Image (tube, rainbow, N blue to C red; front, top):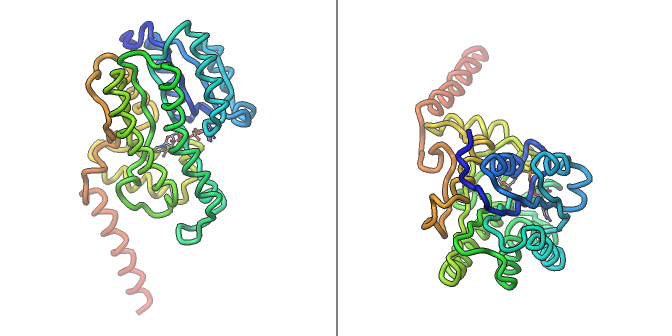
Length: 283
Ligand SMILES: NC(=O)c1ccc[n+]([C@@H]2O[C@H](COP(=O)([O-])OP(=O)(O)OC[C@H]3O[C@@H](n4cnc5c(N)ncnc54)[C@H](O)[C@@H]3O)[C@@H](O)[C@H]2O)c1
């Protein structure tokens, strides 16, 4: 259902790779709500994905940019402002990648070149986007910027590796830049901490199936889907949340406030029963 929440608003969406991507769902919902958009991703992702199709469907433009490159970002913002005929009202940063995770390096055996890339791609790129926008005065008053995060920024989750450090940095950038941009231009900057979700990046996390089952059992409302995350992003881009800024907003069905749930406890017990049965057989 559409409420015209983004009618007349202009935004840039980073990170839509395919129709599983959270950014893809956000782009679809933003279009339904009346937004005009520019989509961007790395040249290689554009070759692999089907972003042009989504752009054609939604009347959007596609501009290639590596979000770690200041030259690419400068050109992206200049071109977007030209297309929009003025400033930008919302930005979604939906970017994450760890070469250490890809190459299966454990947290106590990190490659530091890769570690630097993880932080640059997954966190520092957020600062770069904001800094370029600020230097060009590209964001309109009350513009809203959202980046996607994960609870591993606060809590240790097995196998999330150096991405946990990147997410902690991402959330900190939202606060630090949120102060400056809010003070000077009333721009809002937040992160959404999303449930584990089966996307291309998500499936790169080792044991994602078990993790999703665990968080589903632990969360009173169950895991939040990519579509639900898109709905939440729309509210943050809309004028209905004008005083929300510098926040890390959990969108996880309640997982981050839980310690143990009945459903998870039952599953845990079951594994003991199976052990007992096996022991009985062996005796
Ligand atoms: N899937 C999950 O379980 C989950 C949970 C919480 C948060 N998140 C976060 O959501 C965001 C989106 O991920 P997703 O799950 O939709 O997966 P996805 O793989 O669809 O999206 C990741 C995107 O990052 C882009 N990217 C990588 N390097 C880039 C670079 N140098 N410049 C520009 N773009 C680059 C990729 O091309 C891709 O489009 C990420 O920040 C991810 O960490 C995902």
